[in-house]
Image 1 (cartoon, helix red, strand yellow):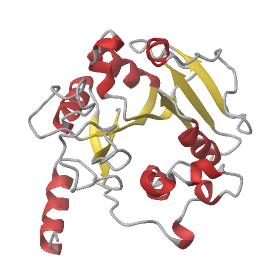
Image 2 (image 1 turned 120 degrees about the horizontal axis):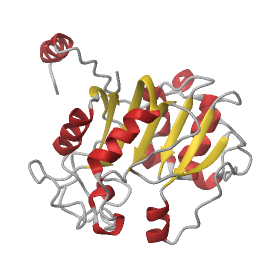
Image 3 (image 1 turned 90 degrees about the vertical axis):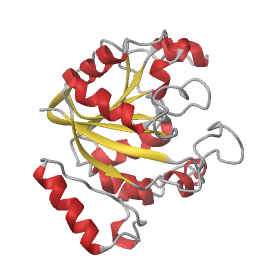
Length: 253
């Protein structure tokens, strides 16, 4: 257990560097649980995934507000339904499809402007090349979950990752946030695991974001798992759904 003195020391050091850390390590309960999670209209299949995905902690951490606009790159209905409810009818969720990824996964790319999530008309499909990230308007938050590492892999081209990150930067409003969730690879492994165990060294992500002009401002421990050895394939039944994952938030100027 980290001592209070150590926590204070870390916080003061971070403040001196202009960094704000928001670390969540305990479940949200009672009144703290976001309404998007307790919404009785959520599908039973979504609720069954909550124990591993920790939506209450993560939505609390993201602090989405009614009227916000969030872009979900490589989208999934589970999170888009939650985001849709969190930002409300005056907010927008862009379900951002990368055609090259859809082709690799044999997923049909929805038409631009269509509403791909039944019952959530504020979820709007967008199709764009990863290095262009052309959205209908600038957004408050861009989110990519468990797929940042894939940008480096052969089936994606690979993508020109620095160009992708610059495009994400341009697509955000001033002060907007880029949220990256991914599986942790062994420290120092850099990109060695992206196309094998489908993990990435967190240090690579931080370096990539700094190069693109982002500032690292927060992280959540909601998906950390110290029991994960960081060497197993993320689809291995022994660890699937319970991998050690980082949640990093980067801000543009």
